[in-house]
Length: 225
Length: 225
Image (cartoon, rainbow over all chains, first blue to last red; front, side):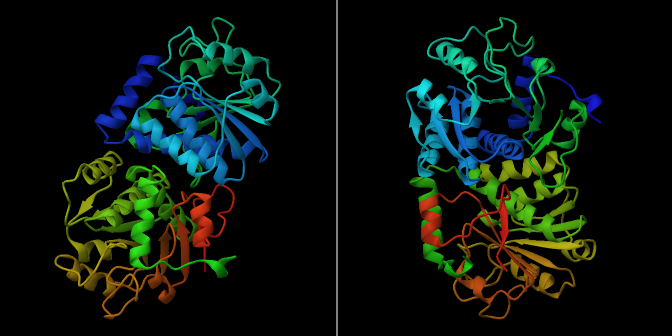
């Protein structure tokens, strides 16, 4: 079944996102909620309850991370957010407000936060990213790459080219990758232990075209490899 | 743990909904997605995959039902919608558009649809309802009450008074009740087999005030009785 799964290029991934919202009527808040939920569920399937540092980028990948932080908190993890560039769009300020309601702290000192956590979530750059990374994220990537903690990347390992993978050898080397909607082409170069798929919202015709596997039962994620 | 759970009156339930959105920053699309997801998960925990007729009311309870229909379809159920009064608010037209993407049919003939299903979901009236029910829903309630199929009620058994229960003896007698956020006062009169709680989005302080139980693992629902 997995043999037929398609690895999407950057343009195809962007088009599918547009189609989900314009043709199929999904709100970004719904897609992000289900995507972030699936990231949290994937983590809960593989890592013990502990301290999770979520590194949040300025776009939708960061939004998925904010949702995941909230659900991780509900699952008994102790999340903290490193969120150096907070856009003032209502979508993101609301997601942060929700994290505040769950008493999820914001941290400023990245090296101290890395030392203090058991697991890192990389929700910095997603499938819209085109490099190279700029400040403050290039320093953050350096710090995360040097960390001796497992990294879970949301959809795209940050620093990687969406199509080509870790071309500049400056990207993260995640232990887990949670592909969202469908894996992107760079995921073929993923060499970590756990490759999951999440974002259980793809209508059946689109799922067939993308060669997506069937999720088991009521699970919001599925292990691909 | 369940001993401390509060049964909310109508006003308190409305206030909590307002607080979740205004103080804690949730969008209605997020709350509805997680609520509908929890209804679908509760059903999947107790009933075999089969044909599900979802009766959809004109408000937020109907919205929860539209979300549940989509997730049930993903779980392998065959949902159909009876949706006689479709408001033109974008929230509801979008949820219906999503159901269309999942090829969930709309049915017009309620008696035929009841005969053709294995399970009925009552997503007609929620915690904002104050009776008596008007056309076309009073006839629908009569037909559903006479049906020999199990009924799952979303948050409030339709026809019941939110505080007092089935005061007029004209309400449904559900086999399952899925309370959302927290059970409402009328749930104390529920006499069916399965009482579940869903809507896993309540911030910890509010959850403590409401005496909510802890959800197990990554589950989006919990059985109360």
